[in-house]
Amino acid sequence: MSSATPRTPTLASRLPNVGTTIFTVMSALALERGAVNLGQGFPDFDCDPALLDAVDAAMRAGLNQYPPMAGVPALREAVAAKISALYGHAYDPGREITITAGATQAIITAILALVHPGDEVIVLDPCYDSYEPNIALAGAAAVHVPLTPGTFEPDFARIGAAITPRTRAIVINTPHNPSATVWFAEQMAQLAALLRDTDVIVIADEVYEHMVYDGAQHQSIARFPELAARGVVVSSLGKTYHVTGWKVGYVAAPAPLMDEFRKVHQFNVFTVNTPMQHGVAAYMADASHHLGLAAFYQRKRDRFRAGLAGTRLRLLPSRGSYFQCVDYSQVSDLAEAEFCRWLTTEIGVAAIPLAAFYQGGFEQRIARFCFAKKDETLDLALGRLASL
Ligand SMILES: Cc1ncc(COP(=O)(O)O)c(C=O)c1O
Image (cartoon, rainbow, N blue to C red):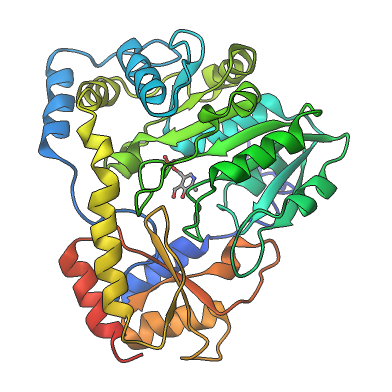
């Protein structure tokens, strides 16, 4: 027996700039202060009991062992059929669809599989917080290009200027978290034109694809043959069916890209839990479950916006996703993080500062609320916000 003192090796962090996310910080503060949590993006209501029944049936039917690496065939077929029906692109469920542990694993797997050390990946700020660390883990450099302040529209001149011979991919996200904007067909066409003579891969984060409002259509890259040919579509069945904790999502991509994706996927998760895949596949057969989502959330958006209309918060458009951004400059001079902290502790409603989605922060006096909440939760929050 050695008497040496046990020693944990010291090491340099792979992600030295990553700390606790603002979502965790604000959720903890909301809990501590009894605030209504409109910060983090998840529903506070349960899913359709029919979905639970479908998963229960799968478990009781003994579907509890490893599924095929790429996902349960019935679910891949259901995803391919949905994409074909909605966006007109036929992905081969055998070779071009993979089921993932949510969009989060889909995105990091796509980046690790397709991006090499020394490459550059363009991200459009403000953006979801996993992109940058994913790119860093691949040994690549994130090149941050801001969306146009004020409108959050893509600035193709700036995106074009950021493309270099080292650019391997661009990550886009529509409907957009956090700004709640959506890309229009014209913008997708502009992206296709910009990339036409390049080998840049498009990683399209479309987790809010079924939450597009006011009669607009979601512009998936799958609708645009040139973008589909160079693109990886990422979506989240957890977001779509109000079961974010299940962590089930998918990737659709042309076979040469998917072949590489699966090489990494099989060694980082290998497979995604079997009964949820079977349950979701059965539930997806009724298209009204995803097609009804836009109307469901649009009602919540409208309820929330109507409730805020009498305040000094200026409502930004919310065309998609389940977020509503507000400009609070008529209410407070505080910087965004301080304002959100004040809102949580003094008003009793948690929100997220938009600056958290920018590299190095960027102050615009804008906070993001999530309206994926029960009507009574929204009404409780609105009652508290009414004084602003
Ligand atoms: C833009 C965006 N991408 C990806 C994700 C992660 O999705 P999932 O829960 O399926 O991993 C989220 C979750 O908030 C998101 O907002």
